Image 1 (cartoon, rainbow, N blue to C red):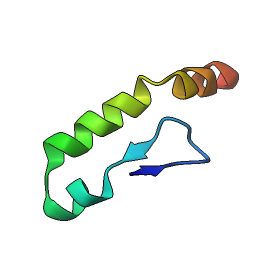
Image 2 (image 1 turned 45 degrees about the vertical axis):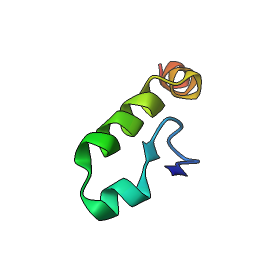
Image 3 (image 1 turned 180 degrees about the horizontal axis):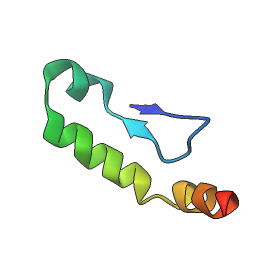
Image 4 (image 1 turned 60 degrees about the vertical axis):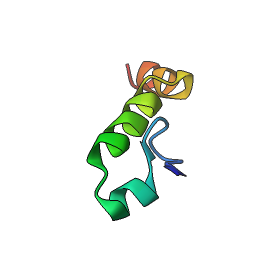
Length: 46
């Protein structure tokens, strides 16, 4: 899994991307967007 250093909460499952498992890609992405680190990042932008 790749976790962006620049955009906290941007998580991508590389293996799922390579195999075309888009449902899994979206599940992992949503988990990242729901993470505390993403919430803090969004708060810092406000």
